[in-house]
Image 1: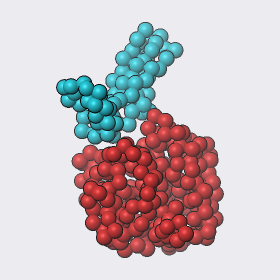
Image 2: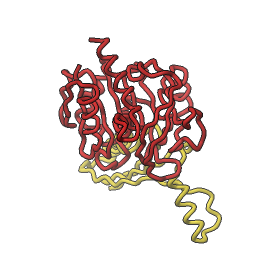
Image 3: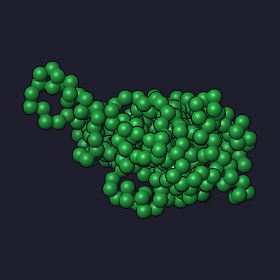
Image 4: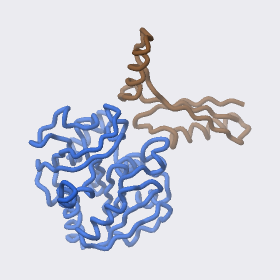
Length: 232
Length: 80
């Protein structure tokens, strides 16, 4: 199995994602420059966090128009796996690969701290090795993480079990205090209808070593690798 | 031709920046402020000389790039 990490001008978690795949998943991984368009040799691509194009216009907007994203759309349409983290989630929403949008945090602050998220479904290629209801301790670092969507989209996400992670407290309870950005229904991550595209605001790639305060993120990458191993 | 494009948040979408601006304005003593909504304004210089075609291009640009239709509305004005 081979992984690609897409690099835009302003990406800054690309090396973290690369490190996790090469060290913890133990699989080959390449950086993919945003002007490249050939994804044919990859089984999964990661759109990393950062501030692509300086967040000009809207967070993730300019990156969503880059040449590589046209290829990512085809890649996703083939059922291959796409993981967007933080700015990567914003880019996936702007590109129309995931519904809704991420707007300025409720309290306007850039939120940079560890939060708890609850696993809402294990029926995705990214969460198969987790338990439903399990609470993960992951860092967030964003100013535009406030997930919004219309009522129809929200109903569809709920009906199809596509809310993958929700912000919660350490006991797994959702409440206004544990929601760091005001996201609708405490949504921290969602998947596509085909379930092969996941976007989330927290950074699992920054939580794969105890030295960094948490290694809960590893199970997400372990799940991804297990899915690919089963497909091979 | 010049296209002026106004991008505004849809009415149901929370605008935390607008709320903060309203708060500051009220702190300065301005009374009777019911609401403040922040938006974006773009000026696009077009080489096109036909107004209808200029409008068509600007509308498409506003829909595809300058706004995010999930959260924003846009309005285009064309000037000679």
